[in-house]
Length: 574
Image 1: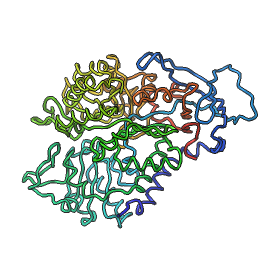
Image 2: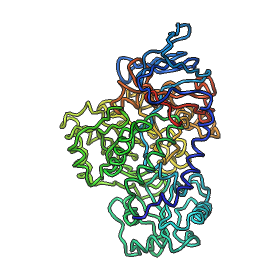
Image 3: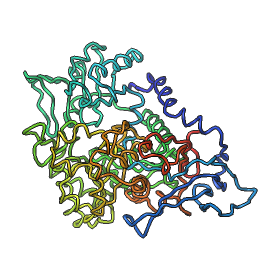
């Protein structure tokens, strides 16, 4: 079978170097004890340390603690030292100088897509393009560098940012290798752009029907233009050659190293197939994964029943955990696939798409609950969120699984009455702060002045007692967690727009934002006893930064530089 990685090794090396080179340069001045000494005690001194300490339980008030040194043995924290504490003197201990850098608990991304992120580093990157022709130019440059590819793939286009504000067409791709099939996912993964060769291969023409839960964009004569929304994407994607296990292992490892370079020590991988889970397990055979991965099994996987029957899995080193299922209820707001209770304000008569029938959604949720798994449902529109919460209200009681901490992934547009239900049902909103600052240019157009008040409503949810697990949804957004902290605190983009913040009444304090990327994200994975804060007995996951996040202006948070990332007492990236 054709392997896209063979032809893209140069691209892989360049991308990995670009992502990690800054971190590598910063690490040269500090020496690490040999990795083979797993039980070695290490004392890291001269740090400006912060950690949020848990209260009596999740959701209770947190207190920020400062410290100047941290001691750990193997992968476990022994002690923190405050300013003025006497440091131990032990010749058998490895002592490292933190050079005054700021130390935080390792940051946790509660919703990302690790394989897709790894693949995105090896494909056409259309993020930030300002026009359809700009995107085509990137395709052309990539194709010229990789002329032997049997398929050209990529991701990241967003027509909302283009001058045309229109979906792309196959016609503009005709100027680039017209005989080679091409497929490019929209930034949110809920729409795709194909060229004519890909549509011919799939047998797509004017007579091809829209599938349930999907839509083919057509011209005035009913002919497909090249854009496919939600389930209609399968018309094309089922013809793309499958990745081998080795291909997936390479992409996963590259992704995890790149994520570590940005300060992430743990991620929740939202929607993992059986083959990708096998790739993770094979990587684990060679030793700990570079970062911790909390797997959500893909609800649409053909072998889901087998995975559920296997039960929970947690590796001895806690770098791989499998105990949850990801199910998708609707599409995304940008492609108007999010399912709304009423029509879109900018497209009369259209309410979005449900990806599963109500019966199938309920069935998948109940089967997963009965198997003892946490259920995490993607829901963006207020209609989808209402349906999912209705299911939780009935099914949690029926299955007796309130302690599983079920989640809604995104929880992006909510009715006021549904905001209250998260705490009442012990359901966690797993949200992504950067979605608000990315969507601010189109969200109010889609929703109107009333519904927007319940969108990206972090403060309303927290005031109602909900626990927010924060993340990025990478590669839809950048995985850089400091982009998320900045968005959560300022409700602004990197140009500090809009002045004062977008619906600033919904922003978080920095303590709250940090907690949502640490303790509360750990709680959302049943891992708060081992992760999320720096305390004796917990795992030694932490990062060192060049800037003090509590001393700089909030507008500068997105520019914070990561100097070192440690996972289980191991420094990553060397």
